Image (cartoon, rainbow, N blue to C red; front, side, top):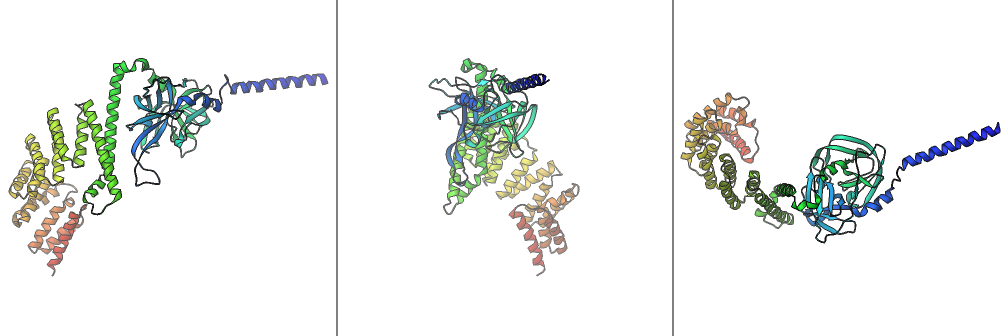
Length: 529
């Protein structure tokens, strides 16, 4: 009996030992590498992506822009000729890209291809010395299973070559996501073909970095994280990258006409985005330049911002001009440049550009767009003569354009050409009898000439027109103001008070409008004296 018991115990011990050994074998299938081995074997093929800026603001020197080079994200070399994979959002919007390799050397880089849908970009290190670079092994992202170990390597918050270990938490198809760009905080919305959800920690700076499996193969590109909702981190499946890579013949790249066309197109799009980006920066701080022009005492902040504006203006202008050289028939490039010239009141540049556009494009609607912009700009800058010149060009194209005629009548009035102003306003209400502002402006003209009878005639016609429009009566401040002032001049206090009630309930947005409200109020008060 004792012998049987001993044999039974030995059998159980053998089976248990075999089972434990089998479990260990399944956990380290095919001699999977550990974290230390993963980074040792791949570090030389991993890189960080940098860009240059001359307007960086640090936490401790908010008022002083710095000229510096900043880290944007991570990447990996997948070809010995220096081709690098990363995220598209890592490089989007930057005009000077650099790659830093594990030996600490910086190299200039150029954009080769992008897949905006899957947030993938391929860069090439500009390699004048024909260096042979080490490259990572690309895996197959269809093979991984939930629960398998993965390793993310990148530069989170600038801490280069940081490795984090975790597991595959889920595999997701056609994943629609929205997340904030770590550099600009702009909202990015994407629908990825396939993503790998991981528990390995990633942070801003990891974007574009490699996600390895236990064999040391890249199976994903770390892309985004929901940082405030626990350990929710995601990588683009590498097969999306492989699909893009398979369309490129890297050996004959510089002779491939389709590649050169795509490269040119990508360069055009990049130049346009950069032009728009620098213009946006210029617009957001243009008020400093306006202050600089009227500054009575030296203000360091205003002077520095004005200097930055000049730099941003030149950069935006240069990128617009590069776009024009590349695609001279693209209308919206001219429009963007013209808008910038007008916004910054560079009329000496706007007019030659307008002349170039006239020679280039024959479409009346396109030319009218620019004529209208220039006319409004000159009107704002009080160069009424030039404003009228452009409005008159527009008016010749369409003699019944009420909007253009109204602007011309207003400009004639500002130039004190009352007769012409009156003629045009009368032409407006003849073309469009429902155009209420035409009647109001005629009433204003006659009021200023103290022809109260004619003024009342047109103002009363305006009142009748407003009665036919829903919710419109209370929106015409000048209508109530001039009717009220005429009532004061004629001693009709009750009518004046009724007009004041109307004007008081009218929304106003400018100092001039508020002064009219106050002016009518004071005029009525004076009647009581």
